[in-house]
Image (cartoon, rainbow, N blue to C red; front, side, top):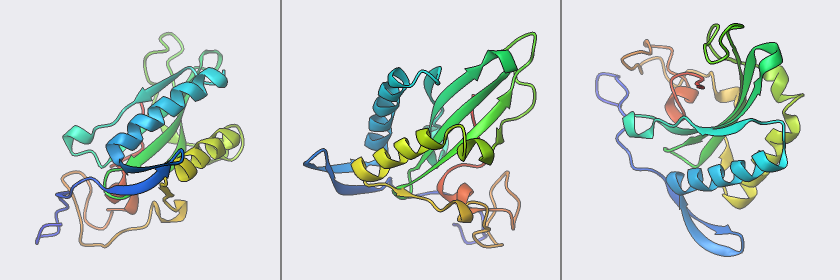
Length: 183
């Protein structure tokens, strides 16, 4: 944070030593994101619910996290569900949530509104998928799940960015991204 309260990330990516499949390995967010994509691609083959794996990370342009997603396109209902795995570049934290994106009836590739987090889907339809992925992230990659109850907490009322007003900067903004994001 600069002296005037404007948040600017200037740090290096985290790294930590971990046992990865019985081998001592140094992991960082970039390496973990590659291992997560590999895991998700295998998961996609084994679980026919999902359509594709996408990497919507913006780490090169001030992104605070890798945004990796398993997509379930539901053409009959004109919507997509994105099981989003956000991996922080600041600390070895991850967060998983499900976004629903309504699609135009006449053109599935077009959005009909903005993506919305749906907690109900996280606790029902995708509960087992989320548990499987969390298990991989914590046991194989030694990552820590960021507490859901802290996501919307204001870090301090004095921090702001060019698009987040003073008093609205949350832990989700600090460790992950500005908003819930999908394709």
